[in-house]
Length: 163
Image 1 (cartoon, rainbow, N blue to C red):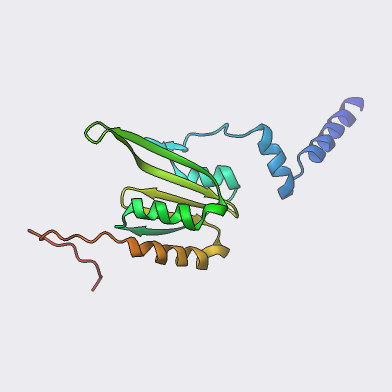
Image 2 (tube, one colour):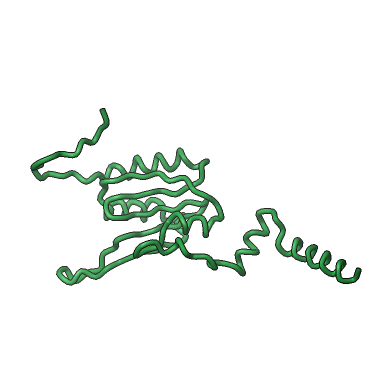
């Protein structure tokens, strides 16, 4: 009988320390952060969607724009969203010919459960379903940095619109 009440008391203590409501999840994650990182390092850099789940404990929506000048997009995001940027993760490399560091991928972690990932000529915004309108406006603004190809096309040209 004593053993049974001890188990019950331990369960009650556990529920007090780690309640199942949202506030308890953050306390629990404080001590158990990043134990399962199998999908976090996908390829040569951090997988943004996995980082989003680990950081915000939620599944995200993704808005995407391709064929953009990422250097201009980086400057735009850095300037426009400066006050909301919490941290920046970056994968960079050194170019021996130009003797400079360049970035391959950048992940901006913003307040309010938003992440922005810039890659080689593309950008994706990870956000909650309620932020879909804001994300669409940001993608529309980033689309102004579309790469314009001035070279003559030889062979097959890629069709940009569907029939």
